[in-house]
Length: 401
Ligand SMILES: [Zn+2]
Image 1 (cartoon, helix red, strand yellow):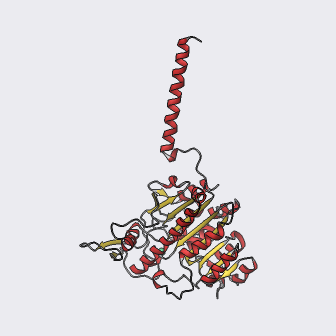
Image 2 (cartoon, helix red, strand yellow):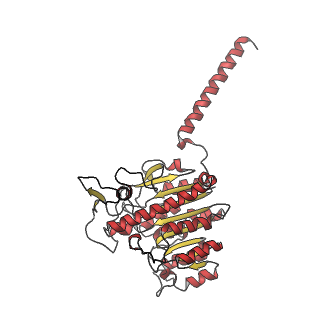
Image 3 (cartoon, helix red, strand yellow):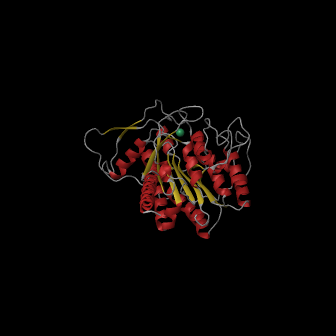
């Protein structure tokens, strides 16, 4: 080899080295260019139903003051998602939850089942179950209502809550089901899909510990029950701002802690959905104390998850946590006070943009984008503007190991 050839070879090698270093640095700097997605053993999806950004601001001002720290739910990775459904700009909870659960846009009222198709797509909870992971649903409304239902059932109408319960027990079999709605498991009348019967007895026969109080839930968790059906109210659970010291219903944070303790025993990990269901209801009713109680109750459940992650470093490295809202409800805004800051513990002057009072919940949802907060493996993939809500399904599916 001549000295000239050697010089050329060294120069070529240097160029190659510099080039590959630059490429590697570029990939590390832009997570969207990662070739293989990060892997998560467990996924915790926390849904604040009907929450808009102005609700977060109001609750933060109330709890921490206008210049205080963020709420716990305000996780480090932030993006926002489009909420529209297959049949309208303004969605309902069924179509919105189905987009996350099954990765497609659905019509109002559809629960991971298109009216014109026989074969429903598999939900992220079902995919997790097929990988041998534990699964769970936690909600403060009926556990069979639209949001949790999308993850563990396939029905043409969200109104078929007993059919949804039947599918939970017979088909998808989540290990943990905690929330309200015992009336749906033992209905006086068949639901619109014709489902009826004593599903509480059936749950016991199928190996679930069926509990109805906070203390019985604690007992089941301490005993190490592997399947728990906890139904703590006939309909939706009692709102945070109306709870009393004598309440036998566990708050959302405690249901979340119970689910984590039970599902966390599975060495293959788990998929858990936790929903603060009634932020939506409070916005429909234009009720600020109800709203603040529900947002802060949900925030405490997020804190419970963050504490659980901190307990063991391996949990943090292997768990994707996503906090998201399905749609904004009410066109809520903060109108004041215009003069004088509201101190910590104080409140704001609220306004909702839709007309009419409403307990029917037929009006009030809006079509604005909603924030997506996340933490853990895969969260950098959710740090993006104007994502489709179906993108959350795709990210969860791609990181689920
Ligand atoms: Zn609603």
